[in-house]
Length: 424
Length: 154
Image (cartoon, each protein chain N blue to C red):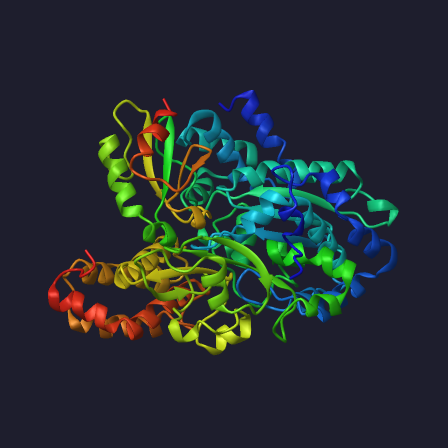
């Protein structure tokens, strides 16, 4: 199959692609083409036609998001590359950030051109030290080469780009939380509407896109929408996808595959299946905030629509595998503790409900639970679900819990009846 | 008083943002890089520079995981406790670490060498379990490799 995002990375001779290497591999040709021959609207149109959907987890059509920014709206406008990648179990953007930083930068410049942004930020998580170093260098090199700054390649279009390194908090990945973090505030969510496309960073029109999403843009501009759609095995979502697998499998890792590759192929061919002596039990398809999927779902294509139809979300496309020797109650407890800690405290259901949920799960895991705790937990999956909280953090936290309560009911009950964790 | 180096590093960020307040997270990180942690006095000095109150700054400082408002050791160990690392042996790694260092999570060794802190997903799930010491990542950690890794930090 044709690789797009990782094509350069696969052929790497050095540890990463610098400006010269990127240009030699055809880099910045998309930018030249767009600035010379395409209007901003045409760039948005080709991305729309390509059916590029947001790779950060939500799967929102990228071109559509850009089209919400009126080209009549006020300046400055901002474009932000969300490089926070803090969803537990997710490590795909790191590969792109570390190995091919110019691909992201070119994508970000093109995206900025499409909405006529004046300033672009790369919002990077603190833990990615290698990426930070290479991106800083890459931005400097791109300025030097005339791809950034005033009057880019003589086109009349100008763009400034800066790297912002976060001080660490899951909420920074949430679009409006990220905007507050960039403004030097606590990363609490903002009410929507107004949406960022009309009133975002410092109240100005802003778009936030994920790293993998943006890294696709130069290739779409270069090769066209039809080509991009042809890469995918599934209608309604073009391109390839960086899938990842972690947990007790033979070869944990990430691979670029056609969008819509089946879970079975990713898990068994690429990750090599389970480690010896272990059986597959369940998986979180796209990070901590997705419902569990099971054996009967293995032949589903990993794409936004099919996984949603199965009652979960593809999310980031990086799966976490639960094996038969790992306690599902312990795993859900770990997830809920994470969400409880990372709740920003802005709204009461999330601030109070998540620690409560984690405490009840801890009691069950430690053999001190009661049967009625299960009904209470069940009730909380609704109380903390969509429509009851300010942002998507708590509803996301409830996704693995609600599916675990149904599917692993026997495990929960055994903890309570036996008064101990049967996996220890 | 902020040092000249600190002040210059903070002011260099002004060009990247339209407001001074936006620089505050970076400003606290700059001070922390130089001094290990951020004191009340440091907050007041940063506040003077950025035209913010210490309360405003503290509300930001306490929100983020990586800004320390208490003293830390010479080296800070961040152990990933998120789901992939948990599956791959976080609990054992934590027991090995607390046993080896003689401290619990959130504590600093008596000689001031290490502070041990939990951290959420470090984004290296395929190489779990993972931890960071200062700016260095260590992955696929096992009990027998741990003493050698810690020895690198004196």
